[in-house]
Image (cartoon, rainbow, N blue to C red; front, side, top):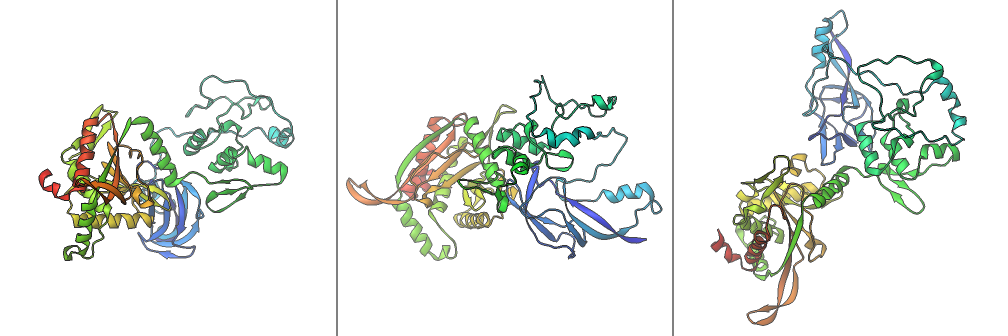
Length: 476
């Protein structure tokens, strides 16, 4: 017998163990009829904006989260009414019900785990006795004495073991219990330097939420303060808290991932940076000729295109620049392919998508790939796959009018090249001073993988190609 039933869709792990995502927008509304794999929402992870396809065909009955909300993996976000077999006790029994629950879902979000004779985790109880709860408002007016220091972990609950119940008058308060929170919230608290025992949880059953930690870090326990004073900070779109003298924006998404990656890179890989200023007049003249050529009609050629091609050619002579230091196995991994990362400034922050197998591309193919990569990044549509697996990167700081800098390595890569602005400057040319087009190149490399000689030769090779593109004939 066929009957309608309600199905919940929980936020899946969208790749590489990400623990949360932000709902950017819903593409459906309550009451809409959707088809299988129809896009129902757009979410932002720490790496990219991702479209969520519907795992069911049916009618939307509820949207559990609003746009702008950060949702943890595994939490229900939308409910459907779908047609299916009656799963009641009279129709199929437990086996059929178990089979129906194990439905396929998105990659990274497997079937629901069923009981299979293994011990289950007992719920931890943190609620204080009723008498203590009733007295809480009055007690809040008087500072409580600080608890005695506890050696070792704070949590005392043993999973899977039932402890004897103490008499009501001797029941412990939740001072000695581990604060209720989720792993992402505990990590956020560590990052912000917040002690969870001092935070008042506003979630169900006293659960400490992200907002509780962020509010506390922003100036104390604002929940308690607001209750006493009747005032609360004004919150804007996206969790931005507006004050008279400052604006606070939660660190999340790409900004959060970029910050963690840059700190990890700066304090893990010993950076060395070298600079080379080059007369690139011949390259700029070549660029003008290529743009006027019928063979390149319709292709978007820029100085970045030619610098990228020069880097790929120079890499053939200095392959150590295309490698990774693997700490776990204590090995140097040299790549026999080049996934060229291009640093892109987007409304969501800095991203470094990469062009797969760029070393095998012709100049026209490289131009097309660069154009597509840039447009996708600016539209915020870069996929997680395009952001992973890079082997060496370029950052074009010249578009901002900057001449040189000390770029930080993309984690897992041995080198990054920064290309500065092309400027007309007085320059020595054929034993005379002439107005030439000049560019400064800045190369940062991991000194564990690349010696000064290798880094210098690599940078010199790039400069030689840009100063005289005909040098390519002698180098390949």
